[in-house]
Length: 342
Figure 1 (spheres, rainbow, N blue to C red):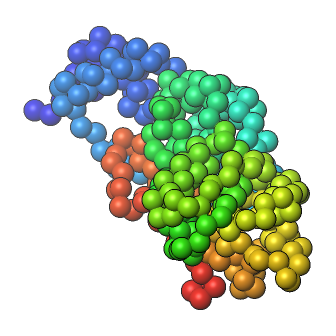
Figure 2: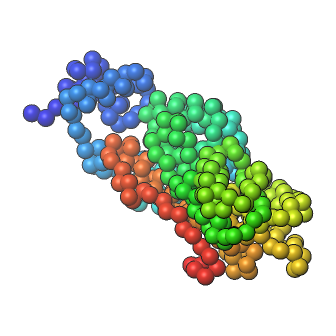
Figure 3: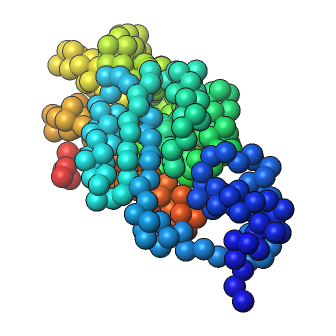
């Protein structure tokens, strides 16, 4: 005879109402009690088809996306994809809400996540900032039974359920490999433009880039990363100063955003000046034109639409207690030169 919810309640020593809250991932259950119920479910081998149950009840999944606000073409594209998900909400049985916070601001992000504890959604997708308050806020939401997906920038040491984004160490290694091949046999210096070292994707890209380029061409000196806060004006100033200061500059790796400033600084160079090899991230209208004109040599891209759709699928699956199909949720790294632009 198959185990029932009554068996769970008896084994865990809780009420049927508590079992129902745990099974349906509703708030109002202490973390220790939730753990006891989940242990009882595992012990007696209870299996519930949550997806079928939710479909039969026409369950609506309330989901919240928390994105950084700012003048960032990639994040504007990500925001557009979330807005498209809002438009699809009815057919996907979701209720998607978008909230924006200042970029690279851990306390502001944590405060936005903390507010969700008072009316917990089924799931939250968040572009993470590595700050202790953010770790704490994610842990609080998990204690309320909320599924968490980190988006674009990961926090692997937090209790998040899934990361929807590219392997950023692999992305950095790919950039280093391309730079090493473009500069084969040459010596000189390579500048790195980051947004902020507070976000894991930028740290991981830099780590991968350094290792890969060092393996291919040890005669190239990688300069300390310049943090432009993904702001085009700041990036323009930093890159312009670097171009004027470093006479042996062979390459520039822009691992964050703010590429409009980078492109403008490159365009300001005199025709007689030797232009560095430039590798950037994210195919936007600005980087596309820079590829076509030869100011940028290669662009690594991630599909923002795939990331948003993946986050929604994973959050719904976690709410249902069902499995995630890893191959479907793997976000690939695209490499674009001016020769293969879509």
